[in-house]
Amino acid sequence: MAASPDVKAPAAAGEQEDEAVELLSESNDKKAEANRLFSSASYENAIAKYDEAASVCPHYLDYELAVLQSNIAACHLKLEQWKDAISTATKAIDGLERVEKAEFSEREEAKQGAPRGDDDDDVEDEIVSSGAQRSAPAPKHESEADKARQKRTEDILRIRAKAMMRRARARSEAGGWANLSGAEEDYKLLAAMPNLSPADKKIVSAQLRALPPRTKAAQEKEMGEMWGKLKDLGNGLLKPFGLSTENFNMVKDEKTGGYSMNFNQN
Image (cartoon, rainbow, N blue to C red; front, side):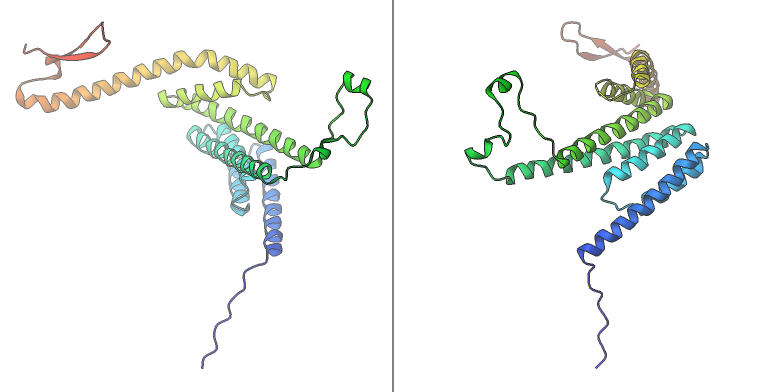
């Protein structure tokens, strides 16, 4: 009887964690090298090295991957590759949203699973005099876990602001109705973010003033071009019947705001 082939046992949880730590360390080394390339204005090489860092980074580490994608977007901006900058900045923003959703779910599960204490558990460990209680509440000690969560929230907000600033600029530079509208939306969201630097606030304010007329002009231009193409198509279809789009007029009803089409033989 032929010997059965060896079957490799699945890696233990501890081995998987060790492997993930090694991969993240390798990814961070490549990211550090990419940062140096960026600082020396070698943007194409920096993109390649950031891509390498992303390829070895464990796929479930959305925050770390979002940082890399945001950095890649910065490189594309330097190279004036607007479309690529929009794409990579969007990937970063999407990744941060997944991080926030996952952490929100974890917090909700922790709340639901937390045991409800007795009334005696509400007594403060520190005895405070009645006079001190009236003047100020007893200080609440912040746990290390709370500090870590706060730091994580600040980090996510910081990277989100960077990625959104980069996407907004790329959309504004790329032009076109869709991109300019998207840039407006990004800058509106940025205007409500509390962690922008004074320099970024000035950029956001200036763009929110400059973009609306640009967006409207782009909309009118693209609508005119689209209407012209539709007229050409319609003329091609109507020509065999001795007609053209000039035989049809759109008339607005001032009472209802609707439109009707009138046919004019001449």
